[in-house]
Length: 408
Ligand code: HEM
Image (cartoon, rainbow, N blue to C red; front, side, top):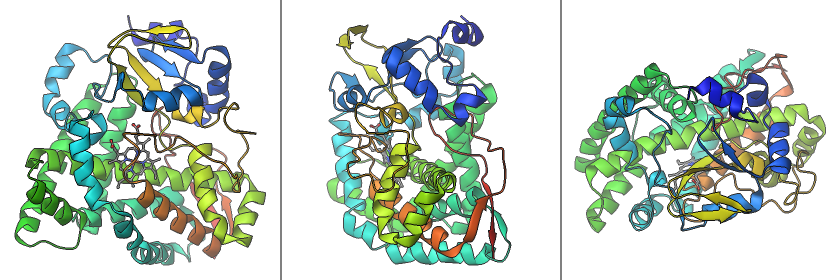
């Protein structure tokens, strides 16, 4: 069946520009009418409610080891075997015991003290980027700040040169398009594959260098852990460096920009934060809940199971709809309201359980520093467009650009 007729069969369309711009009213409709819903278009079950998403994230009958894209014709799969081979090694797509082995190793390079020690460096970076545009009076938040901040941080952690960041952007954009793809486009597959090959080669050179001359960075710590534990081969290490590059910035860019947009649309909340910058911790948690950078994660049922009276068959795909769960009125009072002082906020934006985001502390730190500095330094900050364009990506929610003006 063609995609368009599947879409007609699907009662809820999550891919129109209007819904991509604001998916929350449609999520609410699905949640109330059909909280466990089979989507013909996406070929999987949507889990909309907080309790179902949280439970699925911790359910051993539901596996993270899924094909990275659904419904790809056999011939197309053959063409992208190297890409699929790399993705199959990603920690995100593994189950215990492989997952436990990888996670134990990666945890060693992401300890709270390592992340804390980066505070000053991140603050300096944010200030330098703002200094560079401060006199302009008009900037694009994505291009000038929200993208470069996490891209430079993760590139430095992985031993890459900050000057290569445009190259990183291309590689990462190609991967984001691949994961968000809801129409089969051969050029998206080929550019994702080409980018993954180039990134792997890039990191292979750094790996060789650091083996001879270790430095105080993430990649040297991973090599040290690899040699000590003897439980990670070079291909796994390189594949996961590619994943960290991607996971480490696409999401954080969107956390900073979506969050700032929410503040600009809620000037009272913006004023509250200006008056009391110590509210930044709960502010970032509220951004994560209110407009989650990762809107959904896929899984596969490894056995037949039942959720809310619906029969899920072994091998069927499930979409854990994080963005919908984080606005579930059963879990959050007044869920459509941005409240930067929300006292209880157990959102699922970083997942829950086994695959809980490894970079959560780093992403939080970067967003806290970026938002507080932007709010403090830009005078009379305002949106400079009526028409925001969103990426055509139902999984990773972010804007293509975010023009703002301010009084220098
Ligand atoms: C700040 C915004 C971020 C958000 C919203 C976010 C969100 C997520 C989500 C939803 C998952 C998957 C949970 C699941 O499938 O159950 C995840 C996993 C992961 N994230 Fe993040 N992430 C962010 C930042 C980062 C950063 C900065 C890094 C690294 C530098 C990172 C590295 C990872 C890794 C390695 C995993 C896989 C963990 C595993 O499978 O055990 N993330 N993240």
